[in-house]
Structure formats: structure tokens, C-alpha cells
Image (cartoon, rainbow over all chains, first blue to last red; front, top):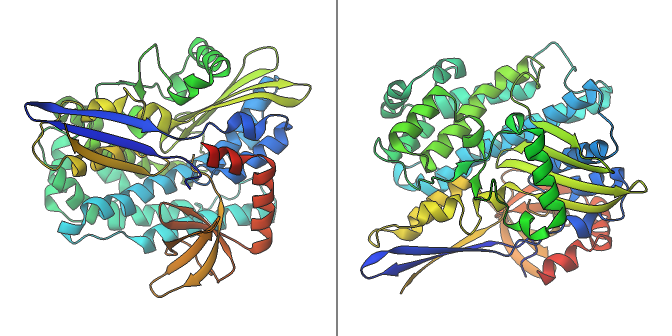
Length: 388
Length: 78
């Protein structure tokens, strides 16, 4: 019994040709079934409850989409609370990738194991922020002039074990400076990057990047919503201007000079995606400590699409999450979710491109696992390698 | 978008490892990322790690809501 579906990634070796790849998803499209007939409040509560990894992003997306459908805008304090909740969830997911998944996958030979205590500390600091804000009744983002505990905890975690130096210093490094940091191997994360080397990145995809939320035009948003609401199949295999696209931290921070240089010289593969997460995470304490979660790229946006229809976009650690809703008499008539996993694991999308054309030698399964993990599906995945 | 289906903790071993029961299926999970979990509690699990602890009352409310919303049937049938 697999309740949430999974991804099956099959690689086939050919004697005299590159390996071929197929990606099959059994993820159920639950939004309509779950949310139809609910009021916006019920729908938001349910979405927050049902989705474990991105529950806050899902709840915020329902709230924003339904408000937009009703032609309403949240007040500034509510917007800030939502952005903070989304940012904290995003940070914890990035930390999970960097401190747990990556060491688990690639750290054994380096003697690097998952850093559970650091991750637990971060998760606990997020909880304390949430509870203290609720208890005091003070809006989260405006809670205090003191730097929030989460930002402090994250800052400490960036120094040790992630960066080994202040985040601002690390963020100012160019590619040569990054390579020097990596070669100095002062932290487990630097040593993990060391394993990726200075040659071509692994698992390069040429798929277009989905624009970050702040860059999505009104026309593009309306088009995405129209397609999603009209066709559930679009939600399962979404397209951007008729082609698959990649979403995630790499799409949001691809203009950071260090990442731009990496992509130009080494390609946009697993290393670029991991670097993008670390860049994004390293920039968060300053943003959070300033109590100005909206002092950066947009994390939540919504569009009123007329006739009780709305679209919301929320940036999550895995990429852009889109919710489209059509209300009728104050209740959900149609609901569609386009989740980041559906973009990145599209049968002809970034993972497919990254794994197509591999030479049959080498450990194909390990390579595929590294690349799939770098695209970070929100469900389990299985890799199978066969001979033709 | 992984589903937050509560799984009941039936046994806790050394090293933060627990056995949970989810719809009659038992599996080992890590408790390294949650604190204060006891046998009989429910946890939300993702790829082998407990993410959140729920007491039995919270879990039964969640499970009832999910059943009412048809999540369980939809997911099983998929």
C-alpha cells in the first residue's frame, strides 16, 4: 500500500548506445477530491493538515487563492505572517537536504554522517517562534526588535557545520573563492562539494527555468491557471510555454554571481542545485533578523482571474507551488494544485534530460540517485537499471 | 506534497528507532527529529523519519478528517 504515490525512474543500458530513461509517477491528484465543496477556511485548514512537508505553504496557497478568487487582498500584517511561515518551512527543508539527505547519500566514504542534532535544533527553534507568537498574540513578523531565535539558530548552523565562516563572507565569494573554500575542506558541506569536483556538473539539464514568482507576468499567471483549471492532466505534467521546465532554488537564485559563474562554466546539474540551496539558506538569517520577510524576492502572490476564480503561487524549497481555484456560492467548486515535483519529474523534464544519453559504463543507479535527489521529489522514488 | 497520514507508534527501540503501524503495515522509522514520543502516540512520517508528534486525540481527528475528505480511498486507489 502506497498512500502518496511514488516516482519510478527506469534506466535501460544498451550495448552500443547511451542509456535510455523513463519516468513514471503514481502521485494522486488529490486537490479536487479533498477540497471541493469546502469553504475557503475549511479548505485552508485541511490543506495544512494533509500535506506534511509543505503544509504551511499549502495552507497559505489556499488562503491566498481563495481570497484572490473573492477579489480580496490580505492586510499587510497577515501577508508578513504568511511570508514568514513560508520562509521558515523553506529553510528547514533546505537544511534537511544539506544536513541529512546529502551526507546520507554521498558522505559515507568521507566519513560524514547526517547531522541530526543540528536539524533538530533548527526545527525546534521554528516551533518556539510559532508558539511564542501565538501565545503573545503578537503578529509573527512584527514580534520583536530582537532577532528571532530561528534566525540566530540558522546563523549558528551556517557557521557550523555548513560554511565555517559568517554567511556574509561566504556569500561574497566568487567561483574561485568558492573553490578555495571547497578545497580547504573546513566543513562537512565543503568536503561534500569537494566530491563534485571542478569539472562538468553531474546531471545537467537544459530545460528552461520556470520564472521565480516575482517575475511571473499577469498574462502568464492567467494562462497557467486557465490550463490547470481546464485540464487535470496539465497539473500532472505541466508545461511552460509548451515545454517542460525546472523549478526550485536554482531557478530563484540563478542570477547570483557565484551560481551564474558555476552554471556558465560547469553546467546546471546536481552541484548547481545544491549550491543554489546553500546560497538561499545563507541569505535567510539577514532577511529574518531584519523582521522583514518581504524584503526579498516574492514568496507569495495571488491573482484575481474574474468570475470567482483565483490563482496563488508560493515559493517552496522544491520550487513554485501553484493553486488554482474556482469558487461557487462561497465554496470551492474546482481546485487544482500544480506542485514542483510535477515540473521537475515530468516524463520529458529536467530529470529526464539529465539522465538521457548517459554512457552505459559506471554506476548508473548511483548517478541517477544523486541527480534525482538534487531535484528533491516530495515523495519516495525508486531507481531501476536494466539491460536492453 | 507528501501526505501527513498519522502512523501509530507500537514500539520504541534504542537509538531513536521506532516501529510504527500505518493501516496494518509496520515499518521502522527514526525518531531523531522529534522529541518526547511515547508508545501509543502518532507520528507523521516522511522517508523513514518522524516529522511531527501527535497525541492519539489529535491523530484521530486528523484521520477522521482525512477519511471524510476521501484522502485515504483516493490514495489507496491510485
